[in-house]
Image (tube, rainbow over all chains, first blue to last red; front, top):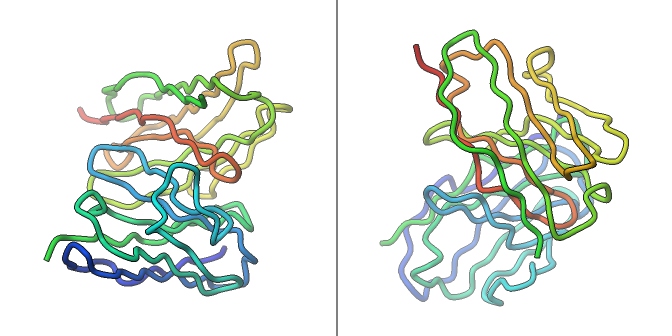
Length: 108
Length: 115
């Protein structure tokens, strides 16, 4: 199974801050990775697909990078509506598909 | 627009089974695999398995082998996930989702297992 190690598990940031979240895969997954945002009581929403492609309708302050085993989600200027939990997901090799453990972004 | 609409919340007793439905619209149902993911209260996301709506083939996470069955009805563009021998640890929100191409999720179905 491919393990996805996501860090940090939580972070505190202020509106306007630049935020970076990382996922590391236990083996190479090419660019078969997505980033999801989840708010309390809601289904996850995909922000990034194929590691660096912005989902339609998602603000351009979100960006993704990486390939192989190291991936990054960056929020260039954190907005109030961005406080949420973020997950990465690899779909290169399954079963099983594997999610990162999540990063909770909180208000400082 | 793409929509995945799931069935409503369920309360089940330990040992029972639950069957959750997910009706797809806004795209060609047989073109994309459907996944099931669950989330226990306060926990992360856990992948359960996948079904190919075209041929009906399935693949399940080892943790759920023998307890989960995923099926589909192409006439109604609906996929189903049945989980048997329920225990309290199965209390969770269950989601259907197209995870590889479209990136769409259903709204979730809360399944509560309690005596």
